Image 1 (cartoon, rainbow, N blue to C red):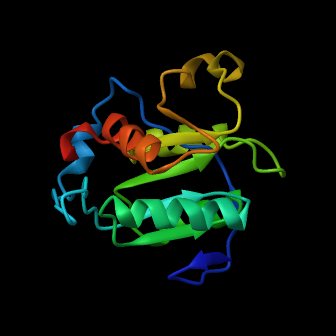
Image 2: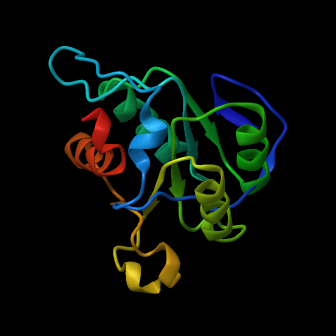
Length: 161
């Protein structure tokens, strides 16, 4: 189930990611720069947040809105994430690494395959524990604030900054 904006029956998620040096700019054509009271970073058409903690997901949604993101879909599991990207087009995704039911690394690889930029969000700051092929993906460490999210978004979607 989606936590916000849209309700779809999906419960499995897999990790997704976009590298710092990848072709993120190719998929940011739909992004438009926005200035939201001088603080907006971008205004993508749609963002997917994969997070199993409702409180953290809602906090991320609030901060993303402050950064100028208007459309945010929140899913709590891998199946929901897979169903969401099958049903909608996303400009980028934020993936919690440890979902309780498993890790999001497989879903991250799927996002790489389909060309959706993404970044990881985790309470773990040591990316050396991540699979080697995903260690280049931007990481936002929990707990985060608006400043950390903005810096993360600029790394994730540099063309929109």
